[in-house]
Amino acid sequence: MQDNFQVTNSEVQQVTTDECIIGQKVYGKCRQQDCLKPLDSNTIPTPGMIQIDSSRSGETENISGGGLIGTIAPNSIIKFDSTVSGVQLVPNTFSVSDIKVLSIQPSVFSQDGFYDVTIKYTFAYQINLLDSNGDPIPVTLGTGTTTDINAFTTYTKLVPLFGGEASTSTVVTLNTLYDPSSVYSQANPYTLVEAIANPLTINIGTYVVGTETEYHADITIGLFTIIKLFRIVNMLVASAGNCDVPVCDPIQPGDPCEYFNSLPFPFDDFDPPSSLV
Image (cartoon, rainbow, N blue to C red; front, side):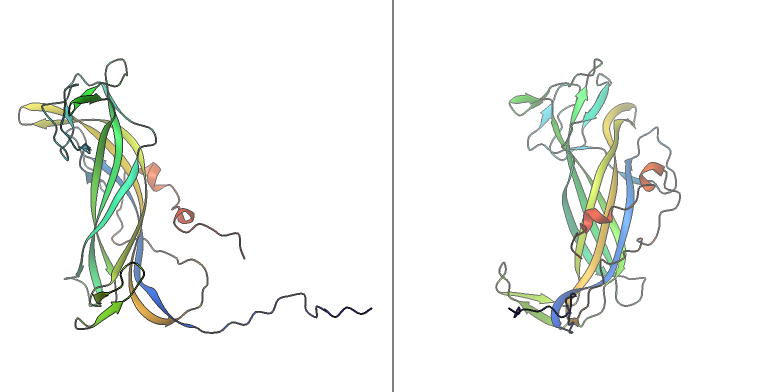
C-alpha cells in the first residue's frame, strides 16, 4: 500500500510579506547607568557623583522617639541624634515604587525634533535604626510603635532625546479597550521609561546645620534605566531582534562608583530572551 502523505521537503518553506500596521515607532532612545548618593558634611563631591537626598519618611503618620530629632512628618527627612549607632535596610523591601514623566518640552538649545524629558524615580524601602548592640530601636508611629520605618528616596533626571516632528494642529482619536473615546495631540511624542535599581550601601550621614549636628539615613542606589520617545504611526515592519540602545548623552565622566559602573547592562531583564527560534 502506498502512503498518500508524502513529505517532499524536510524544511518548512516560509513566505514573508510586507504588512502595514499601526505601531509605536521609537524615534529616540538611550540607556543610563547612574550611581546615586547623598552628600553629607564629610563627603567631598567628585566628578560624576549624582547627588540625592537622604531617606524620607514614607509613613502616613508622624514618627517620633527612639533617637529621632523631634517629630518626623510624612515625606520629611528622617533625622536622629548620636544615640543611634547604625542603620540597616530591611531585607527584601527595596523597590522602584514609581516612575513619573514630569514633562516633555521641545528643547530650547537643540534643533527641531529634540525634546527635554524630565523623569522622577521613587525608590521605596524600610529601614531600622540600631542601638549600640545592633538591635532595632522602636519608634512611635501614631498610637503604636514599630522598628521597621517605611522610607523613600527620589531622583529627578533630565534627558534630551529626539522625538520627531509633528504639526501642533494635528489630533488623533484612539479607541481602545481601556479608553474608548480619547483624543490626543500629535505635537509631543510619548515616553516609555524602564528601570532596574538596587541598593548598594546604607550608612549614617553627618549633617551640620548651623551650630547643630544631625544624622540621616543615607542610601546609595545603583540605577539602570532605558528611556524611549515614540509616536503612533503607520509602517511596514520586519523584525531583526531586539533594538540596540546607545548610552545617554551627556556621559558622566569619572564616576566614582567604580563597582557599579563595571557591571554589564542587564539587557535580558528588560527584554527576556526567548528559547524559540
